[in-house]
Length: 138
Image 1 (tube, rainbow, N blue to C red):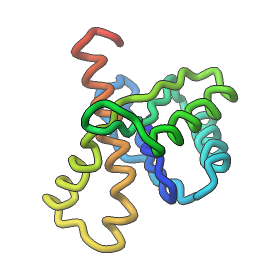
Image 2: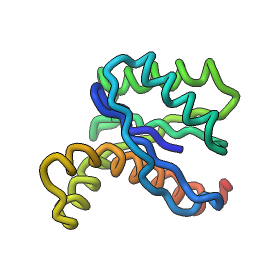
Image 3: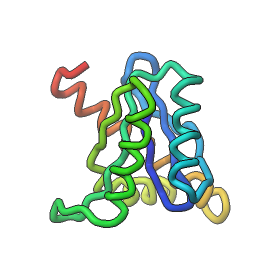
């Protein structure tokens, strides 16, 4: 499962059982990071999840900022309460890729706002799955 954490909306994506294909799983609409962590923990316990990938927003020069710190905090909150492995994954340009996809599918307005985060989470997860496959890590 992958998470694209945001201050208001947090996108969720899952993969097929073979770990080959990522797909959108929904959006958590919540501002409180502790409540977001609890909702993610609930998803983890109600699904057959082996690994949680949390997108880490880095600047193009590789540095991190305030939002990355929040993502690291979320990873720590969840990691302290589950036996499932929690990792962070560089999510540079995933929102741009998700936006391009939304443009190509002509998704506009409320539907776009409601789905962009889960599409971004899907891009994060697919990037991680592709990396694992290319590097024989699973």
